[in-house]
Length: 336
Image (cartoon, rainbow, N blue to C red):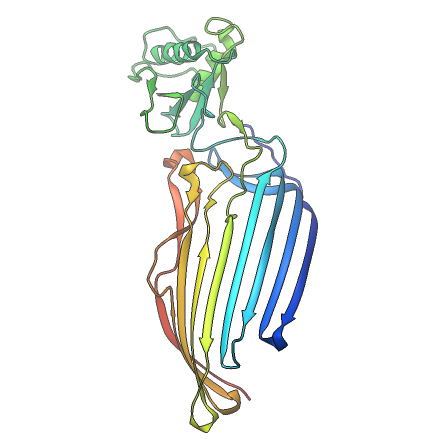
């Protein structure tokens, strides 16, 4: 059985903001600036552990600045500008297991793929750095499962038929970013042997982590929190006969780098991306009606906007979210 909290706390936040709204040059320039600082206690974050969705609580600090501007060089032109900078981080010590690395970045750990249910667990020595002890323990148990040693039928969870053909521990590829070794085995059998192993493999005792080895995420950036954003848009009003107007408009927005989950790292990084939209609107006299043609995502970009990691029993594959493909259409409206 894996162990995770069965409940989670409500979020609390102390929010501080200060700003200024300004108009210059008889309305030709509007400029709004806001600074903010949010101090979260027990911010709720979600992750998947052993096929279970788990909500964790962490303390976090968030601060940044937002700038908005509107420029009107003349009454027929309008330019929108926007910029924001955001900094987020986990404020205190918080230990959680990384679904991408059940070994917690430790070179003395062994990551196990359970052949009975496709789940993962991790084996680590009680004495930090004793990689030989943890590897020897897993190899011993695998030999027992293979039938090379006698299994004690009096111990629960050890009724395993011999001859499973399990190999010994194996290093991960050098460029895989995983410091631990790995092996196929049976987590329940490993747990039972660890309880009875005593000091046979490690003076401090072997430990089996059913939910992975926890790592400290203090200082990590929060997920889905891009560091910068900016946008610019422009439109021009063309006056036609009969008091009708034609208004073309273009918008460009950019979202900076972020992370898909709280463990950060290049594998969870979401690169910055841009999107361009355009529209052309015909307005009737006194704006009583309009007809508009629009194109969203003009250049049909397929940038990744978010991600989350699934359970290890399904291979820890990554679900990604992308920009919606190019869309275009026509809209119309009437004022009564």
